[in-house]
Amino acid sequence: MEDNTLNKNLSSHIFKQRGNIKKFIFPGLLIILFILMASSFFILLQNYFDIIDKNNYTRSLDLVNRNIAEIKRYVDMSTISGDEVYLVKARRKVNRTRFLIDKLAQNNPELTNNLSDMYMQFYENSNKIITGYNTNKGTLAYQYSFKELQVMGDIITEEIVFLTGKISQQINDKIKNYLILISSFCVYFIIIISTGMFFLIKEEKNNKNLLNTIINSLSYCLLIFDEDFSIEYLNNTFRTVFDYDLEEIQGKKVYSLMDLSNICKNCEQCSFLSEKCEVHRSIETRSELDVVKKDGSSFPAEVIIKKIRFEGKTKYIITFFDITKRKEEDAIKNNFISMVNHELRTPLTSIKGALHLLLNQYSEAFNSQAHNLVNIAHENSERLIDLTSDILDIEKIAAGKMEFDIQELNLNEIINYTIFSTQNYAEQFNIKYVLRKNAPTVTIFADKNRLIQIVTNLLSNAAKFSYPNTDVELNIFQRDDGKVTFTVKDHGPGVPEEFKSKIFQKFSQSKTSNRKKKGSGLGLNLCKAMLEKMDGHINFESEENVGTTFFVTLPCIKPAEKNEKEVESRK
Image (cartoon, rainbow, N blue to C red; front, side, top):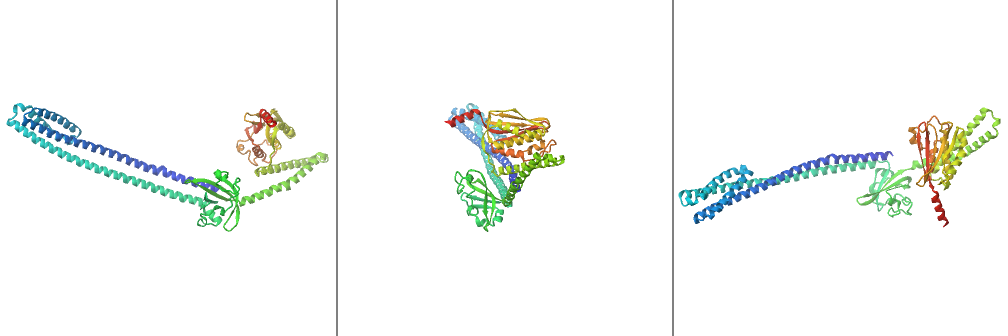
């Protein structure tokens, strides 16, 4: 028991430590990883949109450059051909380009202010040429304005080329930063994962070492084998007790160490694999076997076989508990029971008979003092016989040797018979047994003699613990679930609160001051055990200084069901 408690405590310590790893380290790593991922994603997203904006700005500059070239071409063609259509096209281009320059200046004022100023001069000069075309055409001033427009267009083109190169450089820098950021993110990710794996592997290794230490420190033998009966693992206690090393027997068959053929009651030669095998169908199987050591000696052991599934395979864990001392204690107990039966019970029966004869036939020959002594001896002999009978009955039940003759009985007749046969006992305490509610037609399934023994015990207890000049009340209730309950209620001090949990234990006795006669402390335990063997149960309710009521429930057959069975049997 201590080893099992130690095993559970240390196992809980392992899982608690593992829980701490999951509770603190892994969430911390995940939080750090999430922060890095979120910040990296934000920066990457920001760089992405910045690169898109600068590419759009570059395309807009390229469009401005092409528009200016077309404006110069339209003005030049109108001068050569004298056609005003080219001037209309040039005016449209000038206005569209101005709108485009203004938009760039709003979005990127630092880069576009100088370009915007240059274009305003270009815009004014181009409008002057277009507006004064008809009046100034061919004049020296017109030619000068035309050449000035050409020069300003070249200057704007140079400015656009400069800005395009500058922005391209910024885009390249952003892309480099973008790649560096991605590389840093990957490095951080690898570091965090590596750190987490390191802690996990280290913790798993520590847990494995701790678990091996726990298993090897157990005081009982432990062995693991697979579906082929091949031994896979054994602990240090097994090595010590059996004088085997793991290398010496690993891979060998487990039945080379013990005979497993009798471990399952359903298998003639237990294989653990057949569907009818108890070990195969259940998770845990207990049995007692003789196991053989390396030197050929053997000892009795309680063997517990547990079936588990590990990595898709079935494994069996066997634990051995040396029960040599238990067997010795059982032998001593059996000798004691035999002694009680033969050396005590038989002489006590003779003593009781002799004392009873003296009291009934020769009581007049005794003076009052001698008569009292003989009466006390007679009562004590009865008490000792009851005690030995209870001990023998309890041991029979524990060993499964008590026989029960289950038959159909009329509960009302059993109750009335027991009341009649025990009324004299109650009268010595000025107590009267009263059947308040009966059920003449109720038929139950029970052993007649055992049921009389149970009712007698309950009635005698009620008489002993009742206040004088009160009634012990009995009631019979037929239930709707195919069972019947009868109650025994006394009017006494009740069961103390601290004793209620112990009332059905062996040798338990209440320390109430109202107790009129001592008992063995085995009666209620024996009643409970016998009722359970008859598919019944017992319970109680108690209130201090008011009384106690015991409830006994047994299976019954309703009259209608009984008639149906009789009709079927006749058919």
